[in-house]
Image 1 (cartoon, helix red, strand yellow):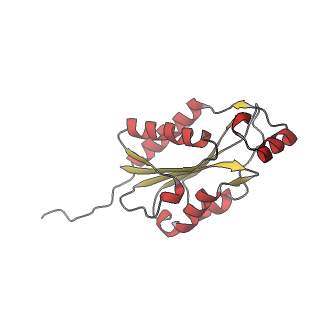
Image 2 (cartoon, rainbow, N blue to C red):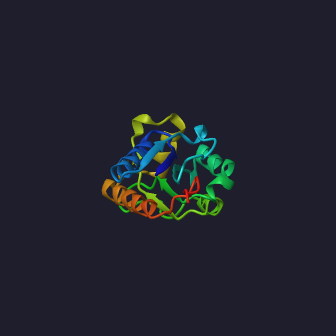
Image 3 (cartoon, rainbow, N blue to C red):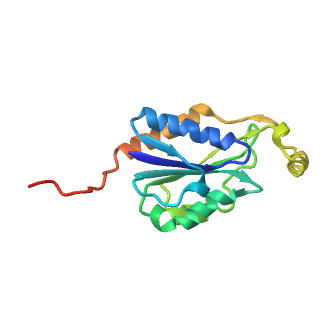
Length: 173
């Protein structure tokens, strides 16, 4: 089954999560298509969707939010899984969902929303971002749990395998 994997990422850490998800979907026999949210204009031929975003200042990035809004009517007819990337540290902070995730879950009728810890590399940040992480005392490092991410992707692959494929033509009688 063709599965759209689309994520909004500011510094690449969330894109790396999408790549790991796509790898697991492919290993399970699905056809993942990884596309930036701003490049998704329709869902023709897609049997399921994984949509994710890095979380900054408690919000999903604009391209992912806009995809959910733009394709709301198409997404409600698809199985959709959502994920957020962003908490840092051990234990991860901040805890809880991004402020706009509830609305996105409602728009997409998501099967599930998962929060994964993120990565912070100060060398990739701009001046304003460096000031913010300094003020928040955000810890630097890669806090992503790759085993957890892969397990989640495998569970999606299994669920997608059990979704009936819509018939495109009538069988001959």
